[in-house]
Amino acid sequence: MKKLISTFVIVFASLQVYAQLPDPGFTVDSRTAIVITDPQNDFLSPDGVAWGVVGESVTKNGTVKNLEELFKIAKKKNIKVFVSPHYYYKHDHDWKIEGSLEALMHKINMFDRSHTLKTDGFEGSGADWLDRYKKYIDRDNVIVTNPHKVYGPESNDLALQLRKHGFDNVILAGMSSNLCTESHMRDLVESGFRVAVVSDATAGAILPGMNAYEASLVNFKMIASHVYTTEEVCDVINKSI
Image 1 (cartoon, rainbow, N blue to C red):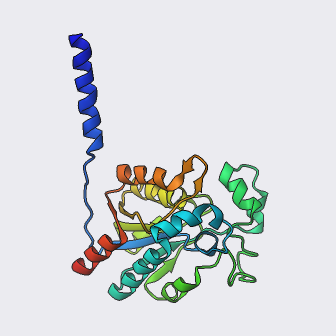
Image 2 (image 1 turned 180 degrees about the vertical axis):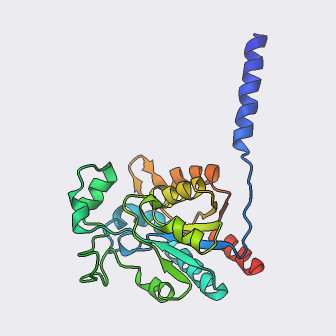
Image 3 (image 1 turned 90 degrees about the vertical axis):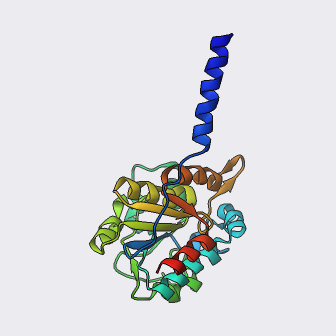
């Protein structure tokens, strides 16, 4: 009995440790950039093909407004913003190896563009930026990277651009939380960047028995250096830069 009680105490103590994860913290300085994944119509517009599953989370979090707040403060403080978009071209639809959501995205023509070197049909399409963000993205402080092809930035030049521009610290936001945003967080951390995630400037799919946003919050807290709300990170930026 004593052995059983001792084991229970050890297990309970371990659970308490995990319940109180350390917060390494995050310092905003001149080597800090903002990274935004997929600020595109198919995720963020009620007319987008994914709105039926992400719209509830986007609306609840105020994601559209919160992303705009990040663009605004970046403009005000002249902070570099790296936008990592998601585009699919005709040749991408010929892939022989696909995961579940890749197959779905191709089926519903999510993020489709007609040509790698042309913008025919791009304006106002699901792959285009949400209209209210265009005035911020078309500025000298914003760099649009090559498109990522699945979820993470392994297939684009985000890490290269961040390094070449001298950034070590990343404030991360965008769509969608447990897919591209979380995958970007994981790869950037593995590549040696310090990453903070803005929890209400992202959102995820909500399906029967599955809340992708809630799932991503667990990993944000376990992997990122810090998790901010939009209000918190804007306050820190205003005081730091």
